[in-house]
Image 1 (cartoon, rainbow over the protein chains, first blue to last red):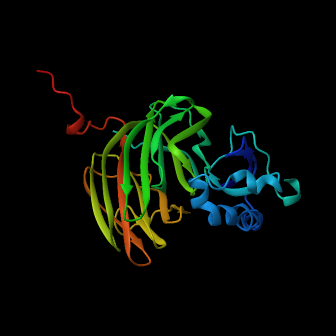
Image 2 (spheres, chains in turn blue, brown):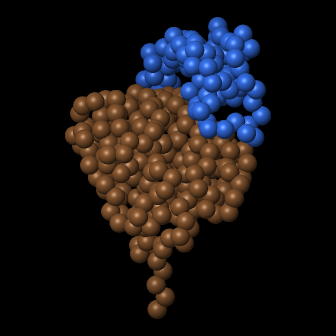
Image 3 (spheres, helix red, strand yellow):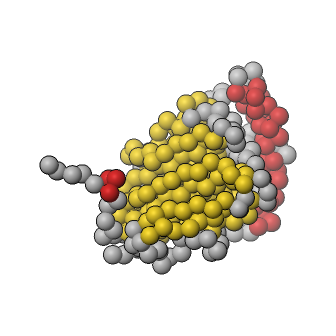
Length: 93
Length: 219
């Protein structure tokens, strides 16, 4: 099983854009990426979910100080045809 | 008669933060192709449609699990475009909770057969599905607590993805490659404690007779 690494950035003012940037099989790298997500965008979404739903808070608030975050929560059996490179080090992102 | 051939899978657990979510998936090349997609998310919004490679998928079901605050859905498309394409699912409004997505491809499939859904009941939850010869069964469950097994048939644990949608979701469990003999197949879902739901859908093999509920009788 391979895990796809997504780049998440702001699209427009209120939407997130996901772009697949590579894949990895290294559990430590997957954990490193997802822990960074969980303490940044994950916390923002968790704390503001209701306000985001009613339009009281905009997702653009989070991205005012951050250009993008990565997440590794998509698993595939094969990356054939997806034109993705293998990522082995977080510095490649 | 022949068992459907399992193809590529894609499982994702991300927050859409929009009124749609896209996911790339590669459909295998071969005759009698089938692609299926299982979704679970907060019931704050609804599923409105899904496409694969721009082709509209058929919705088998969508169900509001109000006790769990979740909405689950199953879409499929027979003879989908092959290769890498985008699967897009649309919602009635922006979804700010994580979405559980499981996509699976088949070839040599006769399409979708019987499907039943059962809401949360105390673990272990026992259910069944009547299938035709050489069919496979796909299963998915939701619970407040961690899901500990998906058994197809009962006693045989199948692998699955454990997702967090602010509830616990098991998705992607499927029968072993050999398929089933025709008849009622016992199924079981378990969680650490409390209630767990159990939805199951038959993937028909080639040459499998169409279930009677789908026959067209000409008079």
